[in-house]
Amino acid sequence: MKKMSSTYNRFRALHPWLVILPVFIIVPIYFLWNRGIQWHWFSGSLFCFFLFDSLGIEIGVHKLLCHRSFSTLKIWTNVLAFLSIFAGQGSPLLWVAVHMGSHHPYSDTERDIHSPVHGRFYSFIAWYWRANTKKISFLTIREYIGNGFLQFLHQHHSAMLITYWALLLAAGGVKAWVYLGLLPAAMSISMVGLVNSCMHSSGGISDFIFLKYKNYSGDNTYNSLLLGFLTMGLGYHNNHHQHPARSNYGVRWFEVDPSNIIISLIKR
Image: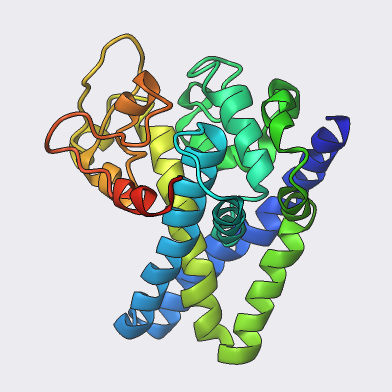
């Protein structure tokens, strides 16, 4: 566990430079320089976002590894974890440790590592490089220590992401790098950032933009139909925190969780 913690400290120092900096600086400059989006390339961005975020992060890492919401073959576990690397959110094991060792047990307290109680911008993105690893319990990933492939991803996720970006640059130039590498990562980081910062707080323009509402009282989480659809159900955050082990985060008839269709195809 000490090795995991020290690895996370190294990841904390590298992550903003590997992902946050190029994603949120180069992408806007690229689009301003080219004065618009090339929509045939943008369709590739959406497809990569679906692979890396919808399948990799939300279904693979969040619903399967974190909450064990369904069971599937080991090959699917490994494939989904592999896809999550290219969403730019780091090691799947560290994602689980943060989510299950800090966020859920201490939701919206000082020990919640990416809660808006530390500030909206902090919970959106700044926590990636300012997080206090002492607040994370790495015991939450003990059952995955024996999975050699997940350990491999944990140790080499940065190198794998850089290699993918380098291949995009070599094969398709800057355009391929931006549309198939940086933009899907920007979308993925932004989606989870919006859930962290807006679905755990009230007040301000976000209430109007996301039309936030509750199905359950007792905490400071909210639902959003828009984010619920875009994030494979995670935007139904009030529902999720009430029933974290459910694979379908939709509770009411109009709350559609798209991940349920995919999970029905791969679950054991």
